[in-house]
Length: 100
Image (tube, rainbow, N blue to C red; front, side):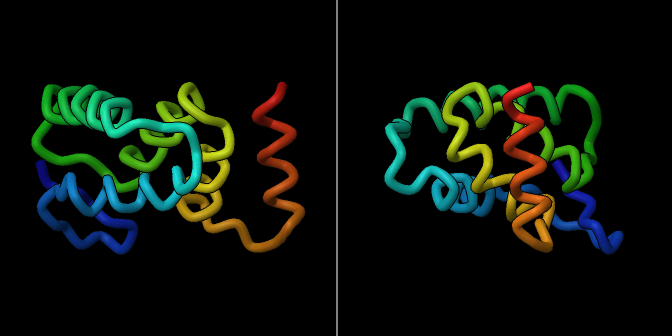
């Protein structure tokens, strides 16, 4: 799978790179390696089944959806990096959206 970055560059998908980012969001949360492995395997199957290339925004959104089901704190942490929150207001808006 090739990941198309925001700037248009392409790079090979790296499970370990994505997993590191997910674990940063999951730090000190009650999440197991098994949960992360299962989530990544399901997402990789989805991305690989559809096409040979996937955008980094699709990867980020899919990870956020999956994390939201596992742990809301990890979801917010990952979203804050993926969506590049500029200030506390954007952070608060996302939390409000999460509980609607």
